[in-house]
Image (cartoon, rainbow, N blue to C red):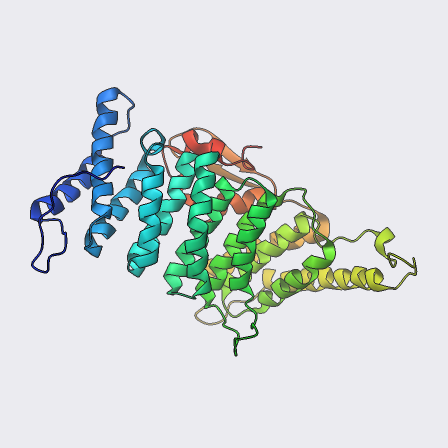
Length: 388
């Protein structure tokens, strides 16, 4: 499917490789697709499909640099145009090839393939195809996270897992599986056969927090037993004291969302034991613990919103931190929701958000390109919460 039957020139070692004319063809195809403006006239569709098939052919090659070039061109094509009409009948082939690149390719190839899977999922939109994309890519992405690969490879896998789950998940159980895979990176615990607990590097930890928080926006009014959130929220609060500013800010956004989803709330009626009804029992203690946790988070947010910049401090990042935690403090103390207005590229429309869930979605690094993409208006319907 998508794989042409043309003969391949063989290298000295007997491997199937693109000869110089094939390599030039892939390069010229990339230029051709980048220069074309998408039109669904029959002749242009046929032309674009021919170029897409050239990329698919290149992904079968044994030379890693050839596959990397094809992946980079595909990512560029996804980010520049709407390819839905071209990939619907080829997504299974593309997905299989992308997964192979993650499994066997170099770090660069795996990162490009992860991004390509995410973009493929968004292009397909919600439905059976994107659900299959999530199901088929999840095992390979999870393996990358479990084996603690190269940091850039882990970050790409986290971003991809967030996107494919966001678009393709059909129920909360599927979302939970991805949330757990991300949380195991955020807060890894020692297993029975593991001597030490691995700690993620700051860039990986910040990416995992952002991906986890992004997916958490999709649970809506769904409510898990509050007791099950005590430990995660308590751990997130400790990350507000992390040395890395990006980690502090990502943890702050996660906690703001937890407040918005009322995951720290216990009603007064719960301040009694389930069986005995005696105040001050286990649920009463949980109520007090959550209140103390709220106060702790508010205090830390207040400190971070007024943090003084030391010598050599990055003023831009420090200003961003102060602004974020002032918003968090205003929300925790006064219920003031964050508001943001963003212009959509090529349109007069302005995207307005007025909740932490919406803000976290539109500011996610892996969706930021939409705001600068002329095709944004065509795919906006793939964002269930933003357009609600």
